[in-house]
Length: 255
Image (cartoon, rainbow, N blue to C red):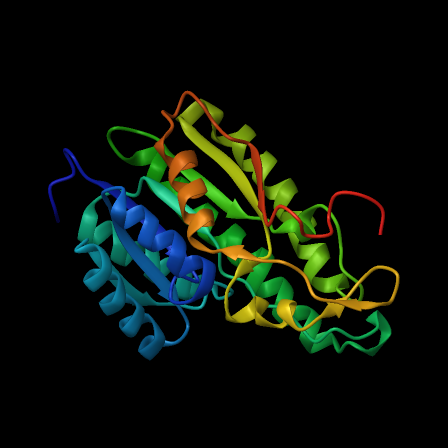
């Protein structure tokens, strides 16, 4: 177990790629010791090596499936065994399914996205709260990746939008239930951060009126910077919701 007197320990789910990796890098730069998790060991190991090279920080990779209760339990046991505490959980892991009319989606696709996006966030929050309530000093922070889809859907995005709207409810419930134990919870809604998942934005995506249009993106590092700000607050203060988006993306207005 490491000395926790001056260190802060964070877990970033889905931390091997994209936004999760950018968040992990920003947290490392801010002095956190970071554990990243995901389902693919080779991706995580490469990400951890990249992050160490970029920041010189302490980063650990632990493979886990956040939709599986036993896998999540083992993940948090590993963190508690190594560090003795957890100060920050970033629920970032998530997937999407093919953009087709709702009636054409399979039950298996629905279950997969609910498991990764919603059940995973619940299971990780549950384990984090158990640690945060018991540790000394008590408390910690949970930050959920809600996405712009927690506010406004895209066409043919029913399952994804449903899970992200549900994340807002989970965020508020966690913030409320965590109050007596110095556990803060907030949500960051991200609009068009530049990652492999958003690469298609530049070539065109369907709009609400049925047309196809290219959309602007922003560097993913800005998401990491926003998370660092949220995480830097004392536990007596909380950003309940924050929207970080490409300024000119077609969100604000009629469409």
